[in-house]
Length: 522
Image 1 (cartoon, rainbow, N blue to C red):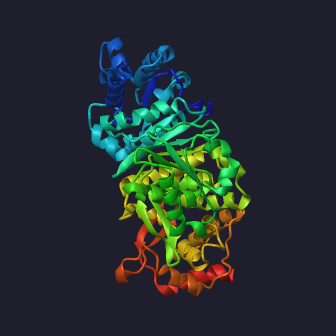
Image 2: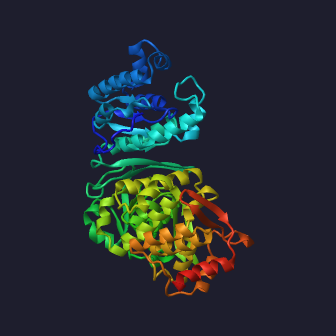
Image 3: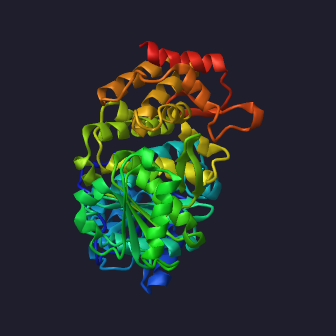
């Protein structure tokens, strides 16, 4: 595939357009299109099959007889014609079709659904087959990497290649996407206990976007958000306002929320609508997990910390004086609706706090996201979506934090200890994470990366020195971390370089004390 021009404006899913499945070889586009067409009562068209019909030969034979350049010309003609005249229906697009400017332009009139298949899965499905581009693993790997940016740029929705049952579950969310403000994109969260759509787009809150969830939405927010967005709560049968701040994420507040929901007549047919930052999301999610033994929760994050991290993955909870999030439950959201436009209303310190989670996520992801962050990229819907997708991928592999998911705790062991030792009042969560990241990188022995991250944090107005608490108090607080396993101590997450994060690392008290003391000494 020639390097495409990816600067065209993404206009979002198009009402009345076709549902077009895109992706690499082995993603399952043909199967997905057939399943979607069956459910929708529509016609499914496969561009490769149509191409073979017109040529009177197979794709493999066309490659062999005419060469790839000739094949691409025919592919562009067929795919372009089908998309340009399509009015509804379902289309499976050939894996290399997005190399054509004509095809990319025609695709903007439709809803493009990227089945994002990883390299290993794709090779397991088609590697070594008769497909001309799937015979050599090294070439296959290079082609997979080369095509990813084109798929990402064109996609209105991103789904894992989960087969027909996943497509059936996702179709209501895809239909809702077509009614969202232009430019809205959708990703998919998967976990053992359930899956859900994630919508990211400016204007979602003001447009009162209606996500695909049943029942009445009983709203939980804080007093600041309630004042900023009164129109968002007009249709709520019951509005519960809590005071802002981590110090109010406690059992007493949760009891008040639960009793108000009960007094308002909420039933198990309804859902909790959590509109706010991480505190609201954690507490409202915990209330949803426990109210009448569990009701759905729709997360509408309004802070950067929540939009790039806290709203996803199903961790809910409240704090005890003994430790952060000591009481909680895993309760995946039914839907997440993230509107980056609302971040403009955040106070500077709140916005800065969110950058700590962005930097943490970029360190975990490495690659393109890290390069964007280290270059000083601002916060836009693409960055929010990239952070969300990073966390969703991790959670899909380990919902209950028993292995791979622990990478998300990078910097958080010390951060939570700082919050606990200061009574949740001195530092915002993201500010504590900034300090925790520096401690973790020092413990990792990654001196150059430590200094670079320190510069990135300082440039965003985040603290790089610890005040108001002793190093000894922070170290003591880590011993009460909820991830502690018996006498083995608290496992730390360390990073040698972006994209290479290790979990379950043992750190001695003296090492930890020195790393935390260095934050104070500066």
